[in-house]
Length: 269
Length: 269
Image (cartoon, rainbow over all chains, first blue to last red; front, side, top):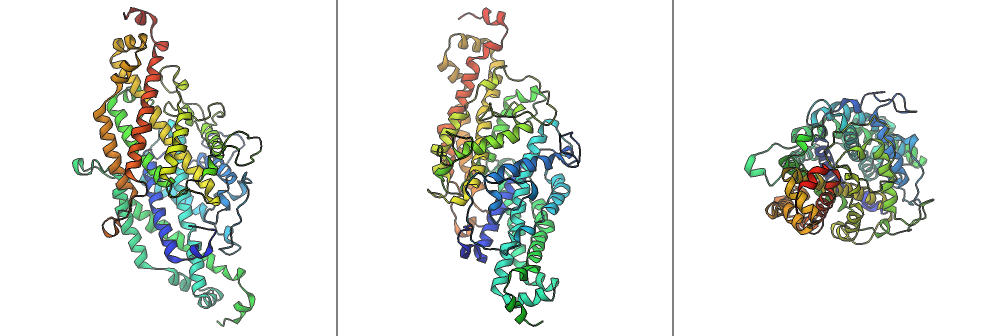
């Protein structure tokens, strides 16, 4: 995705290709996480006595360190990246990128990372990890894998903003009407494409099978996939797809804040 | 690999299983890197004017930040992890792990990361990246992918220490003799298993094909693998396998530093 060229980003085919490619990253990251135990200590509030860091989990601490490092190399300047701890990030050490405006001005305020962290920790970790329990010496590795998973899932879900913007641009008057009416149901219906959603789920099953099994063993020993493909599909069905839609709806509901006032006024409801 | 139980680590079958699993991680990481251009600015010394950081590359700067963060979560306490910048790492924020002794006392001094960085930057990056050149806004993403690749390759290569230790334990008197004679060729021959090496290369070709192609497209459009499988096999053949052997030989050549003096004396050469 070339964010320096808005016309390539605001193209539904290109967005879909990017979303399909992100599936690979998410499946790879979940497979990496599956090497470790569920490791509840990573997620428990105040489990470790970390200096100057009360009320949070070891995962949060690690995530903040990682976001500090990544913010310094400009990660959160990119329009497709959303920090989990926006108030903790640092100034980049590299010169800023002058990204052309693609999304509405309030885009950074649409951030569902807290919800992503909740479902990831509570629903994904127990199903993806190789065993319930923990091995003390792996807690760091676990949090490192978790961060990869969380960042990949967050990017996928917040990419909904581009989908929403494309749809808005392609049918402006209709959306202005729906937004003025605060017709959430109407907006949801307009952004839902069940055929595409079902294809995603089918494709994830195949990716889970193909990426999760050592292909050199496939025909000899019939081994199990490192992460159950149905778990990956369910993760998309129950969390990633609905939260992506939430991002799209939240983004659209505020879209008139960054629209020509005369145009908005001219649309009758 | 359970480093709390030395008997499970010093077992050649378990080590081979771990090495096979690491191939998946390396292939996944190279596939992730292939999304980006070669990006020479990431590797050029003094390309960016980073405060207090002269004479190094942007990759080095990023790698040091990452190692600082990871050292705080105990990454470099683990016997299978070797930092690229051992003099920059920080104290862990978690209580230390009491790992049982598995490797010889000088193990941390066997570190070929500088050589890994050289071949990675000069040989791997140009072949794995999707295009020669760079996109300014992706330099941070590139360095993040590079760090994943480098860490995975480093872990794989330094795992040779466990192979060396197992071989030493299983044929001590012979190795003591070879080491006393400084018979590098003899040690190399004793640790080389061409059948296993060829299997690794064959398996990598299959993994490259299977993990690098979207399986839902495989039969319809005959797409190319994201990273050429032959490139991955060649990377192993020309760099990873030879450097693993170098680690094994370097480790073994010093092995008598951590051996019973009487036993060493008793072996005639």
